[in-house]
Image (cartoon, rainbow, N blue to C red; front, side, top):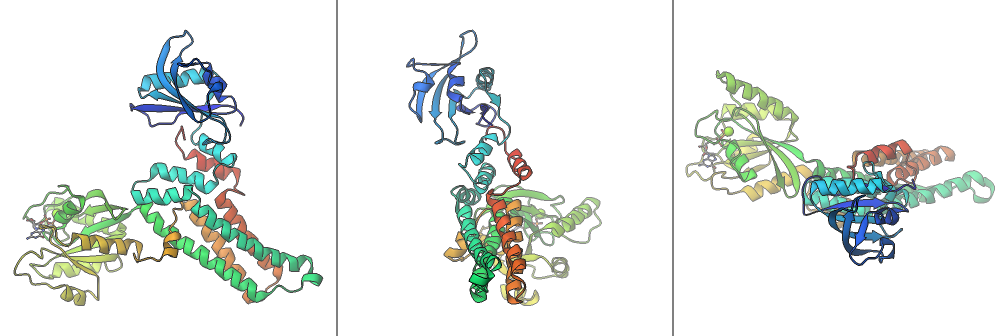
Length: 461
Ligand SMILES: Nc1nc2c(ncn2[C@@H]2O[C@H](COP(=O)(O)OP(=O)(O)O)[C@@H](O)[C@H]2O)c(=O)[nH]1
Ligand SMILES: [Mg+2]
């Protein structure tokens, strides 16, 4: 540390503006070497957190770009160090040239994530917040973005802090009894157990909430299945709001898998339209049917489409058998046709109470209901209480594993208390839980883990 780093912090390519971020003790002096302000002032003389117009010039005094320069003094900056940001006109060549001049003036090119790493090391962000920065950059839906932003503001950190405080309190009771058996005596086992149970409950809710939140980041695979001509491709087109798949009145039109990313109530959903499953002599169609089987095996959720105008036929029964162990939903399509011969009740009776939704892909009715049913199938119940929503927190795999590990230690500790095991064994578990929590927040993170996390960032962040 200590040296001054620089990078282009805006995405590559042409844009309205590009920002070069320079961070380090000597950032103002370095940029001063190449900056000529309109007011004639040096950057050092600017007020902190103000914008100043001027020019970047090269070694020969030639002007490279007209820029706005801001200075943010330590510790009130992104990294917690002195930061100077140069807002260039977005041209790729001029921006690169400015960066080159900053480097020649004494800064070093930043590594991926190095700005955020410095923010962490300077205590501006904890590890959860630093990781939230990655998630925010990558968020693919508004809901995912909102959940990650909550982490940046410290919701997860605060929750973990409370759990840690509770654990440390329990520990102090246990250690007191270990270190001063004469004075302190036996711990109050009932109190310890109750407190541990509260901790278990919180961690448990956190684990469940983060699994739910993960769906918003990673999305799910939904496969539309059914016999030929029931309206699978029509349904995909309605969901995707575009003509993604070819629709004809000929059975066996769709032969290849057709996939699209759509958003259902903020959840990224990869929907796959498949070839209708049936016995066929057509070589191409039979390859399609094979692919369909493979897609079904990988699906998180299967939307099984049946045709209200034909009723349930042997082919439908066959398909239902193939998806028996899947999370699924039966969509009764073509309900616009007058002489329909299939009711939702019949379907439920036939398929042991499976959930049904009636739609018409042609007239686009029932689509709202279908989306609600899918949302519920994907994230479980949707009428969550305030407390459960609070626990809907974006975690990544590392954090999720650490929460699970902490939870396991707490459960072992509770079992230990119940079975009146030796105090020091129980204390080992409660300390174990603490150390997993500190691994998440970064208080006790290993250097190699930290390096790996920041390496995941892009340059300029
Ligand atoms: N009346 C009616 N016809 C539909 C509906 N959905 C699809 N179709 C028609 O059914 C035929 C087959 O549709 P398609 O989407 O290609 O079915 P797929 O083979 O399951 O993909 C086409 O002629 C569609 O226009 C619907 O809701 N109502
Ligand atoms: Mg089709």
